Length: 186
Image (cartoon, rainbow, N blue to C red):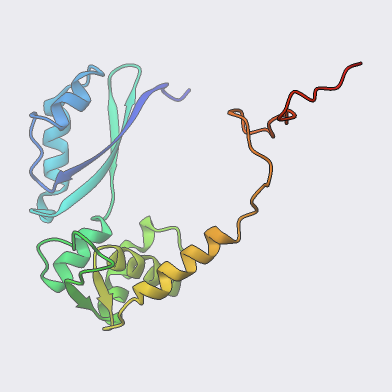
């Protein structure tokens, strides 16, 4: 019989650098897990990934034992590492901070393929490219046409059906009442 699961947690911890301090200690301590057992096991498993952010999924069982699986680093971390960037743009559609090439995207996509929801490398590259664009990084020097994007969004909003009847608070058409006391009598 399989153990009953008490909780599942997802954390991002520096490789080989887990400590019993928050966020690890506070996340695991509330479930009664021996924090030092996790810290030692995690640090041993990820010692080759020093300095890299390592996402980890921890499953905690009813008997306070645990198991965990590590994932590949977040796409944003890998993009920043590939192009030597400290951080993404605070306004990604207005201010571009760097450029990334398709071969760099392919390398990142190959590394993350097992963690992505993609059937082939081309789809994985598109996912990673989307992450890069959301960070203010252009792909192969292509600028995003912000004006065209805004215009398309405005067109979508104006195409939504608009009702001529005023709506009540519940979202249903409000009852109309004659304006000058011309109520009908039965």
